[in-house]
Structure formats: C-alpha cells, structure tokens
Length: 366
Image 1 (cartoon, rainbow, N blue to C red):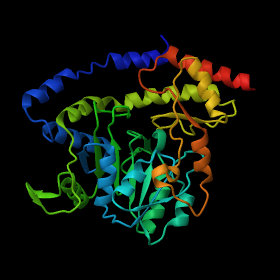
Image 2: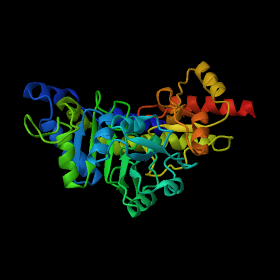
Image 3: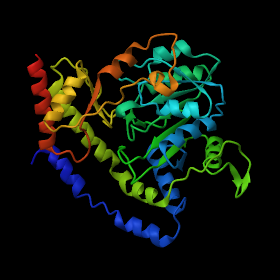
Image 4: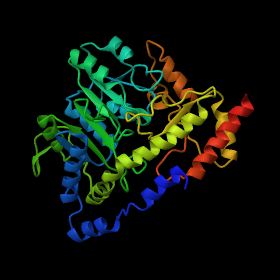
C-alpha cells in the first residue's frame, strides 16, 4: 500500500460517527449555546493550553469582536498584512478603524518583524498577525516588539489549527486569537463557526457579552457594540468529534507537502519554507512565473489549482488606498502564488498525478 494511502485508510477507518451527536442534539431540543458548545469550548481551550475559548458564529465575527474586546476604537490604526484575502481588513474597516499595511517576510509570507518595527508607535492600537497557509508567523519576535511598545497582538489562526513551535500552539502567543471552523479549515464544522481564545479573564468576559447583544444579563444591554454571534450545538458537536483527529490530519497534510517539496525543489519555483510542526499545510502554495500558463496546463490534465490570494488588500476596488511605501514582497506574492491540492484523503495516486503534471510542466519549460 502506498504510504499516503495508508494515511487515507487510517482516516477512513477512524470510525467517525457524526449521526449519533446529531441525533443527540436533535433530541435534546437545545440548539444554540448549550452543553455541546460549552464542552467544545473547554476542549479546544485545553488543546491550545489557554484559559478561555469563546465560540461565535464565524471567523469573521471573531476578528471583529476581538478588536472590540481589545478596545480598538473607530479611527484607530491597526497593523496587518495585505496578502491574506482581506479578512483582517474587513474586520478593521467594520469597526471604523484604519489598516496600516506592512510587508511580509519573503520566506513565510507572514508579517515581517522588521517591517513591523518600522511602524510601531503610539498611534497603533493593535497588530493582527495572520498565520497564512498554515505557516506560523514569527510570533516570538512580533510579540516581543509589540509588547515593548505596549501594543496588543491579535492572532488570526483561521488557517493554522494545530501549528506549533517548541510545543507552543498558534493561538497561545498573542493577547487574543481568532479561529474559523469553516468546512475547508484544518478543523472544520458542517457549516460556519468561529472562536476567540485568550488567557485574560476580563477580556473573555467582555467577549461573552459582545457575542450576545452586549447583555450583562438577559435583556439588559450593558456593553455597547454587541451583536448576535453564537455557535449552534450541531457545529460544536461535530467539532468535538473531529478535534481528537486534528493532529493526525495535519500530519497527513504535511506528508503531502513534503512529497511536493521533494519533487519540485530542483525547479525555478519558491516553495513552502518549513515542513516542521510550525506548518500544518492548510494550503500548499508555490510561487512561480507565468502563473496563468501553469494553471491552464494543469487544468487540461484535470488538476484543480487556485490562487490564494491575487489582489493585495489595498488594491481591492471598494477600498483602494495609496501607500507611502512599496510592499515589494506582498506585490510579488500576489502576482505569483498558486495552490496545489493538499488535504486529508488525497490518495497516493492523486498526489502522484499532481507531481507528474507539475514536473512535466517545469521540464518542458526548461
């Protein structure tokens, strides 16, 4: 048996029973923020080694409410990267704040500490760090710089469930961290879902109010800026079933990525820089010239690719902004990135097809 197919067989024989928890929820007649939600919050907090997990309706709500929990006000300036799909920018704009875009590291494509150091001053209210494509950013240095300036760090972990460095997981470095459980994530629900995690008790209490109208108690609004953003019991029940398998599935993703790296390193292409525990291969992203031609060739061979992400946030039509400096790495990334299939359940034969097609393309290109 192909080693990758062995991974798939393990997944297929894992005995995941989704029907029983669904039946349990249906017969409980409690569908929102009940025992399944509380249990998942506790289990996910334990998995990350943090004090609090507060679930919400989706990852976008998590980002917006996290900024509010940090007391970021309208008109404030928030540092973020511009190559990560506009999700952080959307939250920043939603609260009336202003994004301060800085360049990313050329190897990891995550927030560059040197670029961060150049903009940190008293006008900055927060820093959002996206662990892009499953690659953990340089959190130790980012937190060191930000803490010295008295500025809180918000981790966007939507693509990095389970990533670790020196045993410390994504989501446990900053003042607060956000997760999405959209079905395509490394830990995905049956629909939308999100969460915030923190060690700060006061912040956790504030978030719990914000996710439910700002209530201090039922029907009494004591905190401004609240909304209805609650996880339902079905999503929590499914996430509870999946959570024990997350590390195993991440290993499968990493195994596929390692095979790709070993096959493609000799070509004129930039590949993911780490295959260690700090990378959980949410996406396998290469950077290459003539991207459109590459995509078309693979499409003709029945291999799906995608671009994550083609437009820098400051060039989005609804929010075009002129920057006082060039973001060279960001621009180059948006022009050259392309994602290959990489997910649990991809068979050995399917991975071989991808490797054969990509290798043939580069060999023909010379």
